[in-house]
Length: 149
Image (cartoon, rainbow, N blue to C red):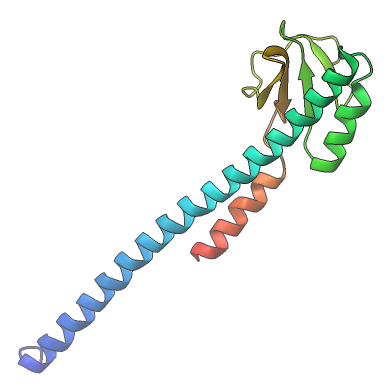
C-alpha cells in the first residue's frame, strides 16, 4: 500500500499543501505585525504632536512655564499617560503625577517624546511615561497575539 503510486501522490499533495499554508501563515503574520506597528506608531506620532502643540500654545500665550502644571495634568488625564515637562537644562517643570517637580531627569528614563519649540527656540522637553511602558502597550500585544492565533 505504501508503495503504490496513488498513495505517494496523495502524500506529496498533502505535504505541498501543508508547506504552502505554512508559508502563507508566516507571511500573513509578518505583514499584519508590521502594518499594526506602523498604525500604532502613526497614532503615537499624532498624540505626541498634540502634546507639543498644546504646550507650545501655552508657552506662546504666557511667555514662560509659570502655571503649566494644570495643563500637564489635563493632558495626562485625556491621554492616560504620565506626562513630564522639563526645561532645556533637564529640570522637571511639571509632572502629571506631581512627584518629580524640581528634580533632574533620571538617567534611566526613556528618551524624550518630543521637544517644545516656540518661534524656532527650544523651550522645553516632553517625556511620556519615561519611567516605564504604559498599560496600553499590553493591549497591543494581546491584540497581535489574538490576530496571529
